[in-house]
Image (cartoon, rainbow, N blue to C red; front, side, top):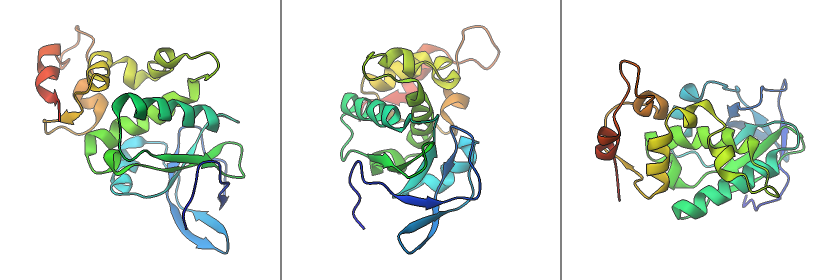
Length: 190
């Protein structure tokens, strides 16, 4: 089935997941997707996101449009090709995401992608608060230098660690904190 932005997908889920949770469809029954397990922990979901073609994201009530607009702005800035597709389900707190392979084939990009989806909850298109929304999530706030470097076009990760926050957390004070010069070596241009 080809899905386009705005097409409503119908889902069956046993409970209302916490905002910021992720799930893949388990199967289809008629015209409805049966949703599998919901994951609030992004790290647990990342392995399922590898080469994923469709998943569901739980957001604050009626914020699906904000998340989609935020991610469209993200992908425009990064010139992601092809672009991801987003749309609503019949549930006011759950949207569907058809991610671009650009995000799903590389582990570090998958990690950042899930953080950015959560940050999109705070985006208000009429207010144009992109930067405020981008750093509304503690994982981007704690990795500001790496996040800005990524948005400047340094989108290839050369390191071995897993997880955006685990690799790039930097406050300049704590043991294990990473220096900007090290981030420059880890995030390079394609």
